[in-house]
Length: 66
Image (cartoon, rainbow, N blue to C red; front, side):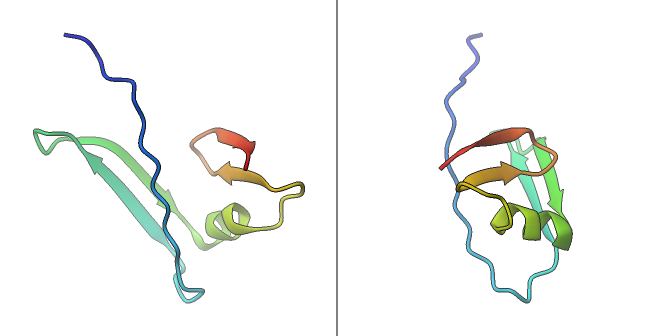
């Protein structure tokens, strides 16, 4: 079976009152294929503080420029 390598982009805006986010990805069989938790520190790092408009996905390893 050929594996699908296509990716989708998800943009989420959160109120400053949000302190923790959990993301769970399910496949067509409702099996968990991805799980990510972001703490308040992770959210702060992902939403600001880095120079030259670099974005960062904590614990995932996707670093790039916007």
